[in-house]
Amino acid sequence: MKKAVLRKQALEQRKSLSTSQLTLLSQGLLAQFKLLDLSAVRVLHIFLPIVEKNEPDTFLIIEWLAEFHPEIRIIVPRADFDTALMQNYIYEGKESLRRNLYQILEPEKGHLHTGDVDLVLVPLLGFDLKGYRAGYGKGFYDRFLSGIQTFKVGLSLFEPIAQIEDFNEHDVRMDCCLTPDKTYFF
Image (cartoon, rainbow, N blue to C red; front, side, top):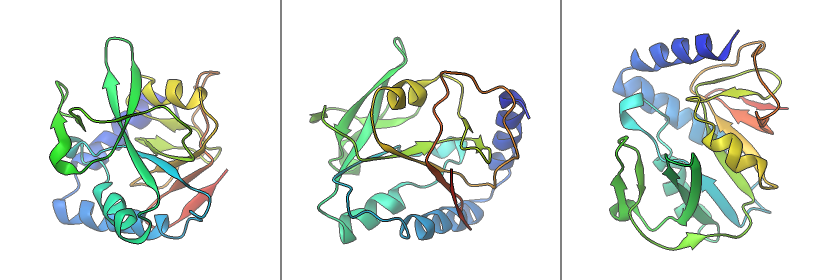
């Protein structure tokens, strides 16, 4: 399947989810996340959900980490849509976040993180059995991930497709992907 078709299907699937369905799926992702070995993780990058696009509620993971792994530094992205690059900021709570022009929650200000990142939770619309993903098509995460050594974990509300046909040399494969019912390792 081509990325454009996968994006369209995934967006339609997400749009059809009720609030209660999305909550159950997000809770399933949290359950799978809890099974990961976090013993070597000191810094974790996590995306913040775009509610209007029915993205997984990553605040469930953030809250669980704060309670059970307070030693892990959580960082969140702030996107520059002119350059298609991201910067990472230390997460300082929901009250430090503001919506940008595209309605994406971002740290309004705060402390920039420029060091290593041990684990990145990667947003996606769909993925395949080889670990390739389809995002929104802007390449923010592919650029970010190509410049660092980290463990890359996708979060998907839905099961994988067999193969994305049009991946390219700039697409960065994930190391694993969580779905509400299963973790896929690549």
